[in-house]
Length: 118
Image (cartoon, rainbow, N blue to C red; front, side):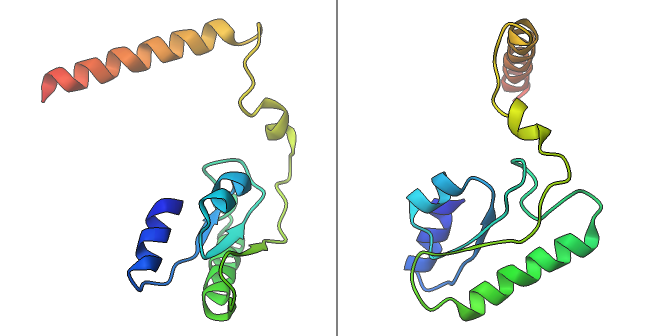
C-alpha cells in the first residue's frame, strides 16, 4: 500500500496511509501516515467499534488537510484493550511449529487446486 501511495502522490493525488507497521510504512517514505498501534489487519480500530473507526477515519482526513511537510507521521491516541497480541505476533516455537506447518501445507494445496480450476 505504501508504494501505491507514493505512486499516487507522484501523479498528483494526495494520500494518507492508515496502518500498523510503522517501520515498514515510514521506510517506504509515504507523504502522510496515521499510525495505529494495533494488530495487523485492524488499522482503523477494533471490529464493531464504529465510534473508534469513525474517529480514526476522521483523523486521517484531518491529516490529509493539515500535513504541511512530506513524510508526516501522526499516532492515533487509541490502545488495543489486550496487548497479548504482541506476545504472539509472528511467534514460531515448539508449541506451534507443527500446527503452522500443517496450515501452510493446506494453504499450498488449496492454492494448487485453485490454479487447476482456472
